[in-house]
Length: 327
Image (cartoon, rainbow, N blue to C red; front, side, top):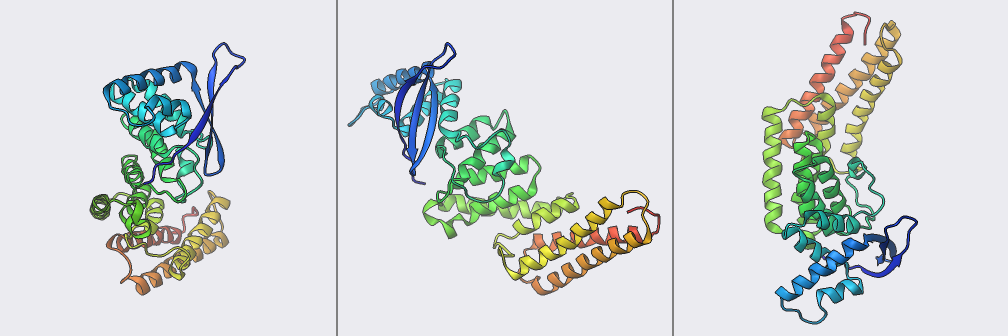
């Protein structure tokens, strides 16, 4: 992955509080980015850069020169060295300054769209924060791995793998399948950003996860539905394909059943019961036809999941047939 190079100009800003901060104006891909470093933190980075210079031969501009010139990669490298030397707090604060692009908030779910967007932060710093938070705050760790996968045109394979691994640890199998599959298949769509050995490892991890979900799964109906689109390493059904539309049609019928349930909680009349049964029957028939037409294209996990989904819907329909007055 090509490292993003950002040049920033340092300017001392006096705030209303007693503390002053360095304001860093950056420009990446023709978009303004503002990074703020506490003056003391910046001075610590400069001091550590001086230590690095005394330990390593310098060619051309020194790392201190690069810091003063506004080289974000130099700031990242200094933070990494500070972290390796035991100054975890300073390194994490610097990585936050570089990685946080102002859009992330506190909810990592906002990144869980599976789509690239124009992430304006520093990808290596986001990845570093993902590893830094892994042992102490897994949801926050996932948040930063997802950020690192979201730079448009610059997919990060290691971030994808670690996002998938964390989704699994957080008991979200659909997220795990989605991101581990993206990691496994990155060499097909973005070969320049894929590492062959990591692609192989991700395919093995994906196959292992698929087998475990079949043999030891206790997923519910909603989880099974969420997993299905990501349950084939060959990306079946393809997005916007006829097959995907048919599957979504069955899910729409299930959604209409839920609308009847919400509108008629508690005691219901025969009319509501008839509508509910109608929608469930339509969902079952659509899924059975889908299975019959596409069994050869589906993975073993998808065949298992769709069978489970049909079974659960049939159970719901059978309950309605008891006539106990409840949906």
